[in-house]
Image 1 (tube, rainbow, N blue to C red):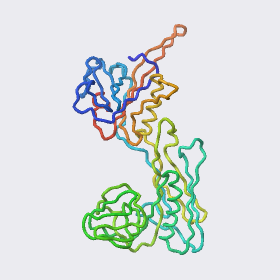
Image 2 (tube, rainbow, N blue to C red; image 1 turned 135 degrees about the horizontal axis):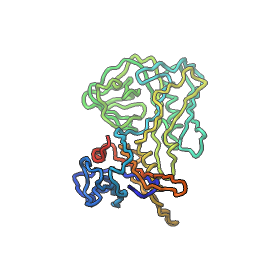
Image 3 (cartoon, rainbow, N blue to C red; image 1 turned 120 degrees about the vertical axis):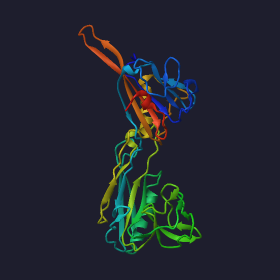
Image 4 (cartoon, rainbow, N blue to C red; image 1 turned 180 degrees about the vertical axis):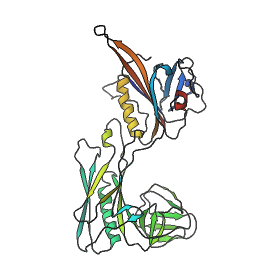
Length: 383
């Protein structure tokens, strides 16, 4: 039994404990279940429900933090979220429902100015007022590629100021011819390189479903009319949404929310996940929301927020006037974590007057970076 009242602990592992067998050798950034008497790191399932154990974490700066001593017999409930993921960002389309299902932007009238508004919610603002950005383009001709490119360029200026909010990409239908080799691309660059063979020198290409116009090519390299917006990688030539494209008749736009940076000290978790609506009185097509913005409890930003919150529950923070002391920050808001949770029986408080008894619980959450296999659930018997 833990005698603290209504306390919460969060232990974070960003580094593997490795083959170390005792808490004194626990690496910085690692977490483990240890024998309370010997300090030995436990790696197999605990069979004795009366065995005294603790959760231990060594911070990135080398400080050792442990939970109060408890036994598995004290555990009221236990659970785990073993599948870790980041928040899902919103994806919407105009003139399409997917990168491979493009129906077009409707009839384009030469000489008409088109305005498309993006109404953004939850942008980390200090109030609930939506922020509105817009893309505008005056159609000089009825060319559909020029039209979506003009809107994209306008949105790129608006939606990246003062920081990236939404990425806008062009999409299209058309007949695909696979690349002859894998293609290496770099985020923010206009250069693409084939692993072998001769690169295209003109026409259209799709890279992971996004449309680009080839402005030139030399040897295995070809150059795009706009910077590549995806992650830097080598694209498999067999991918169904990458290759050269001909016979294009329809163009559209894809809008993808950009993951926002998060500081657990200054930001509210409610403003972390961007949501938006696309509206226009000038277009005959409407927004199609392909992917909804969905929070994940295993997202590093939420773990970081819980870390800050928990420090007010299990101890009073040390505060100095100059300089202001900062709380512990081990959680990485850019990563995802596998979570294990224990609710441990607390001290029973009784009332002599009415004979009522009240029990408070201690909550322990162990967050392990998603790429690590530390066996925490095995040791604690969490299925």
